Amino acid sequence: MARGAGPDPALVALGYAGWDPGQLEAEIAGNAWLNAPADPAIIFDTPVEQRWAAATALLGVEPGHLSSYAGHA
Image (cartoon, rainbow, N blue to C red):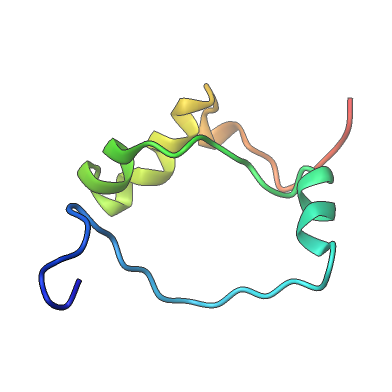
């Protein structure tokens, strides 16, 4: 990419997140994560401050209706 031979468009994000073995799977099973399909239009064409709302809309979820409590039906 530094030589101009990478994918176009591209998004480079730096950060770190670490999980113990099985921790991420347990968090997903415990409804701690909201997963949505990747949408290139959201990633590349949507302003950063609007991406969360656009991604939750893919799931039919209104962010204002989310709770910090998880449960199981």
